[in-house]
Image (cartoon, rainbow, N blue to C red; front, side):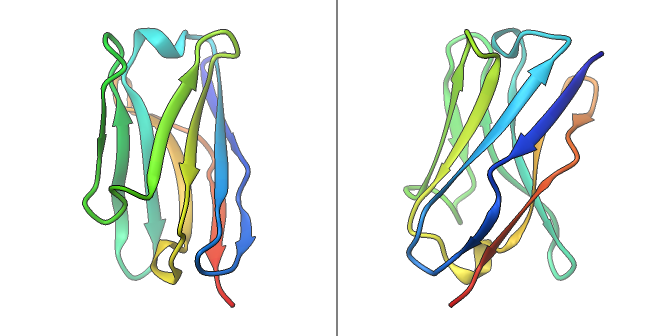
Length: 114
């Protein structure tokens, strides 16, 4: 079964860190571009980051550049999003996504609040 399963969300104070995980099954993460999007009622769906399949190159939204880092573990078939210096405006439901085939996980909630 082809699917993405996110984990690692939670409540964190401003300035804190979280690492999200995205376990892929049914396909190798190294063969596809995979990344992260987030959603809030106010802003809707926002693209966060992407990792290319071939060279592992990464891109980030300006709002998270320098604070978030996307990585992958080919052996574990898992994608990660390391989020540092979190801000209240990072509060959202975070989804792992594979644009090819419009695949998305169920999401994991990140709440940044004091």
